[in-house]
Image 1 (cartoon, helix red, strand yellow):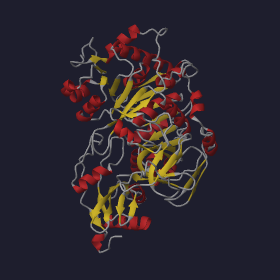
Image 2 (cartoon, one colour; image 1 turned 90 degrees about the vertical axis):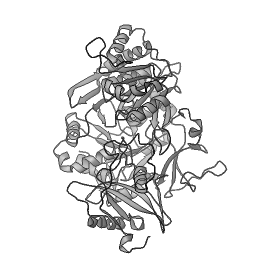
Image 3 (spheres, rainbow, N blue to C red; image 1 turned 180 degrees about the horizontal axis):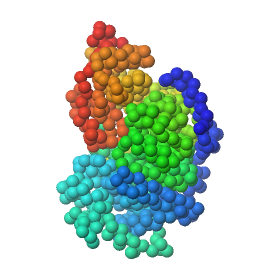
Image 4 (tube, one colour; image 1 turned 30 degrees about the vertical axis):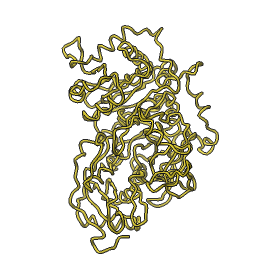
Length: 625
């Protein structure tokens, strides 16, 4: 096991960790000084005419090289045998898929969607779409009918690949309202057999059969896409209004590849598991494209979360790099470190987190469960790739997102009255270490989104004075580490203080009874807002007014005057389907406000309500701070 040293107390410790292998990022300071995207372009293949195709760089250059017979993807499923595709097979089958799409009339620039669980058909559709020069758009399979149809309509999708049940329940009733949708391929039907495809659809097997008949490996050619040609369409929901369609280009593969090497430390020979569903941007960028470009073996599991199963997969599949979400880590934590210790992970050398800020306790839990700290990363749908990371070999500061990726310039900008970056005469002000403001990035990295589909005004508002405005509040420290404070619309203003929910949530999670926390600001006539925390308890702990008072005192000891004034216990906090606690939904329910777009809410908890064990510090006679 690699050597490590932990310095400091629970909230401000620093973890020095010696990686098992020399990190691909090398010495961070040196890499940052010398790195350029222009030089990194030589790490890809492209062609002499300047064409660049995302799928070719991810698969074909390996399929025709030394990694041809290496397993590219291993498909696990609780209810089916494990199957595998080598890079050679993945290259050939995605060529056939591209041929099938072309036979159906799909042309460069057309939109193709999947609404599927993790399956070979999904991965082949992604790669075949890109090889055909079309634009791939993932849909999360647990979406209900309304968000599915809305995204199909907004994306002008011409072809959808799904299963019969999803089609008949979610798409068929509104098919008439989707004039752009010409083709639907269903993966679980065979028109030439007993199981017919639903009316208005074509069996995937028949479409691929036609593609295989027409496919000639001697003449097949990947579409000659340019680096700036559209390749990916990822929808992201705001707090109100319709989903935003972020458009990414083929050149994004350069950022996927570089960050998969630098932040995830991926290299040929690795067995890599990203638990994000391919229906989300992480599951596409780092569940498929980035890792394939590095020549690794991807493990993907179609089964639902189960802590014992996950530990067994890490052990039995000999996973070397594990990329997951803070929510998943907290669920593993709730299962107890004892369960982790029933398993052995000698090959595991890097554990990484994505999707929301990583609480310090989860970072340190990684030491107990795996003998490795968890490394946080920060990025957004709009950035297309990791922008800030705790890199291998770099000291980990729990609670920090890390430092900027080489080739990415980050700044914290002064806030205006609305919490967003203040722009005066077209100019922003860059703040120094320790000051809180809006996190911004200097455009120029290859995976930056190039448009919000059909919404140029919204796109223009995402930039100011040569910076992309993330909408996240943050601060930097003297060493350049970036610390997340909260979304601009999440920050709580209480008695003159600006309070970041993440800081409060992380502090409460240090209490031994607490599994998860969501924090909001609640209107108060004296303080403006007070901090209210919704707390999920670990197994073996029961809600009570006494425990609520204990947590308030615990928070006050850790945080002082910015601690929660009210605690509510909730064993089913509302999450997005990608795992984030939905603070805006907690606030809307607390205040009786409209709940807004619920298409990304995890349905199993979307109607949860808090238990009644609530207490308030001010109720005991203490004046507001």
